[in-house]
Length: 306
Image 1 (cartoon, helix red, strand yellow):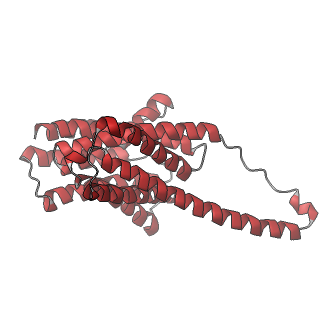
Image 2 (image 1 turned 90 degrees about the horizontal axis):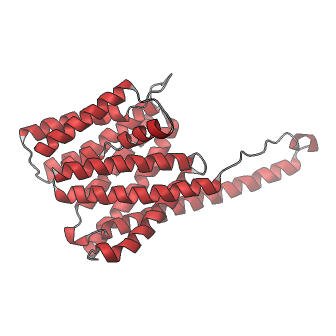
Image 3 (image 1 turned 120 degrees about the vertical axis):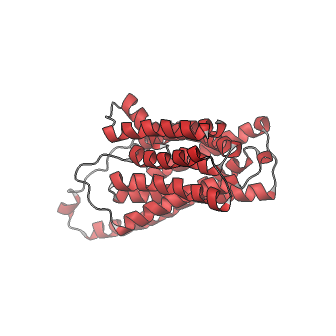
């Protein structure tokens, strides 16, 4: 029961972090917002480490670092997939793969066993993940093979995060999460640096071309849109605080019981996002998503009883 409560709570808090991250991405570069959130979580965990405890061992540190690589890959592939679209298909596809991969790992490789009610709960939870993650989109087209590959890759990377974190010992406390955030932030900022260098080279090339243009054409350039950098960074910091809270809840959920249960309920993270969007932004929750939320609660109850 504790696993179900912690994992579903962690999923809802993760959804809140995604909501804040989405707001931040409207104001600054999405990758920058994610990197700032990762650094914020890393620093927060470092401050909390002496109070929460945790043994530093090469085994746990290595698995924590692996989970950080998986997190960075998941974020990058998810943003790329959703940018290609359609979100109405690729978003739930990512969530389902993120649930199924660690679930199969726990049941097949880990040898986890559930009561019959638990297996029915897992099946119901997978249906709920699809419905909750569904994003109503007018004029949605068939996804491209590239978008599908990226979406599946993101889901596998999220699932890998669950699997790698599950390999750590209970005695490690939050140490694996410290490594997770540190490695993830380092990778994301490296990618940002590479993008910035490539952009600078393109701008230099464009400046050379502008010098060769007739003067009349230079006046036709359009000023870049204004960016709320300060507001975006504040939201990214808030996202990092909420995100690391969700990670701790999910870590506790994984350690309290079966990985298969924790992973499937943890994949309900879109629920927190759509609920906050409805409350704060007054966005409409589609009927199919209400059905998904109801099934998610039913599945969590079944898994708790199992």
